[in-house]
Length: 178
Ligand SMILES: CC(C)(COP(=O)(O)OP(=O)(O)OC[C@H]1O[C@@H](n2cnc3c(N)ncnc32)[C@H](O)[C@@H]1OP(=O)(O)O)[C@@H](O)C(=O)NCCC(=O)NCCS
Image (cartoon, rainbow, N blue to C red; front, side, top):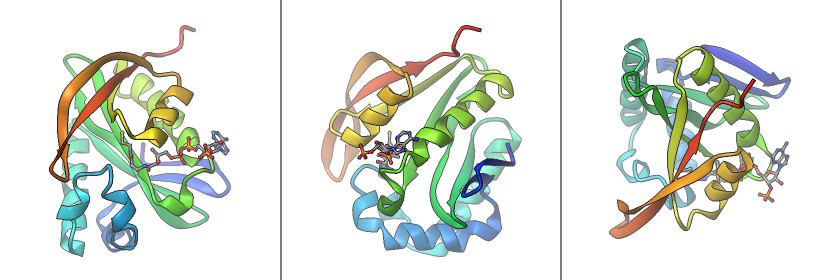
């Protein structure tokens, strides 16, 4: 999915090398809040880090292993949504997403996710979407429940965030029956 206009003010666009400076700027401006749940934030310290992320994402997309779209709201880059990994053999996609705090609370991610998931089911031919959410990440938990994900398990010590072991609830989403 190269580009998808969700409504006149909200658009998904595949992240391109030319977006690196804008991407780094929003991470830099929102570092303190984004780092709470996103382990890569502390390692993103210069534009070259965002360039590297985008180049890797484009390489992975070419191999149908992953992809990352920017989220533009009223012309500004406000977040990212994509699949951090796609397993073609198991036909599972593992998505990830974030929004800057100023863009939260407006239903932006709730509108972006169904577009990305529909693309995964129909174009990437996955038959399941699986995501792990930190058990204390209240906003992310509310989002997955709102989207219709079902909790399938709990993974203890799923990641280390700022020297703290964090458990994940694992959620799964399958296509709605036709
Ligand atoms: C997870 C995250 C993307 C959720 O963002 P969000 O803005 O809360 O998500 P939504 O798009 O579903 O918006 C829901 C809010 O918009 C409101 N809303 C407005 N219009 C809406 C609509 N059309 N549809 C759904 N919700 C709508 C809801 O009432 C809700 O408001 P509330 O925050 O007051 O409860 C965000 O918190 C984030 O980026 N967190 C940091 C990174 C992170 O944790 N990523 C996930 C790792 S698994």
